[in-house]
Length: 625
Image (cartoon, rainbow, N blue to C red):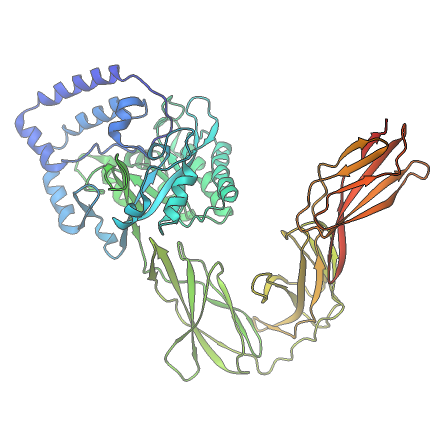
């Protein structure tokens, strides 16, 4: 991965390279052959995201050249004894694939043999027009046709000198090109975080960009940990516990936002400075950079790579010199070991009624949707009854009282424009209610407007109720969806937040009783409506023409009308002086007199079947000349 675009002279590094090269050339031929037999690869210590190693050596300080050469030189001392036997053993157990992007054959961990490999790459503005540009130089159609199923795009970066965060200006162009060609997209931030606060800031930067651009992100959000050009962050600078805590802070912020977190680093960084077990337990994925055809090669004296077998990496960046016909330069290329055999877990019946069963289950990573299968009592065959996306719940309706139904859930994946089926969950058998007396229908429902994003609901108590279920009509589908469960029969209100301004919402409420660990829901109430306020009127301006004052303001989304009020200086109260129709954001007060001072306010109104509500502006004053 590559973070910054500063041009750094490499004369000192070239000199050091020459010294190291001479030292290597001085080795006996047998030693050189041992190295060639075991690792005829790119630099195994590399890990530079978004640009080729060759390009990095030309103009960036962030190549770790001295460290890389020293590491390579040190390896000759232990590649003499036992290396070939160890690699032969690994090779015998591993499985292979050929990469169309490097022309090499790669050996994969034997434990991953049941997984499917998807090919991907990672890019930044180095594959666009550079800093400040907003273009992509990749032909995404050709990239997809050659087998690229996913891409990680650098969206943000932390300056390794000043520590400030900045956006990659080519990110949107890359992402739009990828999405238009059915290539799944993930994001990464070039991280130089030295504290957990900075880690959270980097995570929030990615999340904010997703919201700003509306990107369809189905791959992980990645924290790229590597040396910076100005050495703000270098390998080993932080203790293992500090480094892990910083990554955990990033990962938790990403998880809280509903995305999958991942950390990227080279093999030695992951082994020496990161508690990968802790990350794995919290759901943070591992992306390892190691430029070698043997990701897990274990050499007898190499403690770093002996430990690699314990790291559960899901992505392997295996080269920075991949080539695709859709781009003239080199690109980083990656393997994704996707386990499509992961089954849905946590399938349970959340609510059981006489004619319906509500199911829920745990989310499966990367699943784009879920298929719901049902079998009725007495039948061994399952039939597909529905497919749901964006949720891990489903309500099966129109069922028979006192009848047993069995269910299975299958995850579905959309990767690189192709649909893949996952593994069914274990079956769950549920019997609809036949004996329990259901609670009475809820009455006395009422909705009160609170703000532009909140509506307060209340209802009359139902005797014997264990709690209440609140349903809201989906504005797009027209179907009622359960949005909350009040798990206390004595609580008779609920605040629905996160709503659209100036919008009418329709609700229903039902009471339920809990019997032998199951919830039995009564008949839903009649529908009732509430509405949110429009946004406040902004940018109210006054202008004069003679003795007239013209009041103007910005349009308020979904407002159905506006009302203009003028302050009565004698009474101290505002009086309505005008009403304007939807879309008219101006009114001229011709009753103003020269030499007098006038103060105005404007209200934006939203009217619907359930009534009307409003929000107002700040007061604005002007004196007529």
